[in-house]
Amino acid sequence: MSDQPTYSIGALACILGVSMTTLRTWEVRYPVVVPPRSPDGQRAYSKAQVRQLRFVCDQLAIGKTWSAAFRLLEDHLAGEVPLPVASVVLAGVPARILLVDPDSHAASFSEYFLHEQGHEVTVASTVDQAVAEVRSVTPALAVVDLLVSGGQGMLFCRQLRQELGIPVLAVSTKNLRADAAGVGAAGFLIKPIQSQRLASVVQHLLSPRAPTAARRRLTSDGVAADRDVCPRN
Image (cartoon, rainbow, N blue to C red; front, side, top):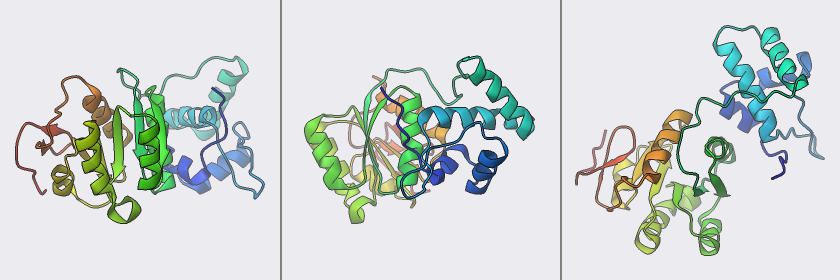
């Protein structure tokens, strides 16, 4: 599969947890990772470049300076040594996942980490696009922003559960945990989503032991449990 430039600088900033100003500074001061530009001058980073800059961030997290981190990256690239696998990758069976999110930055963030786990991810920014994708290929799991398309995400979640029976991980910037349970979501996470939390919840929902009935209590970590009442905290 080709590694086409995919991620904007804003999306990359969300993925790495650094500012766009820092990314621009790195590009000028340490021109190791230089993204191509679109015709209108916008940066577009490839997945390989995202991994390279994540390696830099990992080095900074253990106390390396900017210059030392980029020297290590240069050494890896010069020797064609594979970069260490990101710590967010968890063991599990790869699956086809439908990601429905109107926020392009948030979608890029989630898509990146799900891809890092080996999953095949299809992204839709509207319910209409998501319906078309589902009609083409049935996913094993759907991650749906409840407020997509003016709040139609809730109805879409219910349809996925009733018509396809697949687990749905509902997400939102608002605390809609009770609403998520009401439409049959198997899990709920509040945005912005932490990468480790996303990885662990998705892995749980894809496991054979994950709860499948619509009436489940959503726990504090977003995973459904065998109870009938949805907490409102």
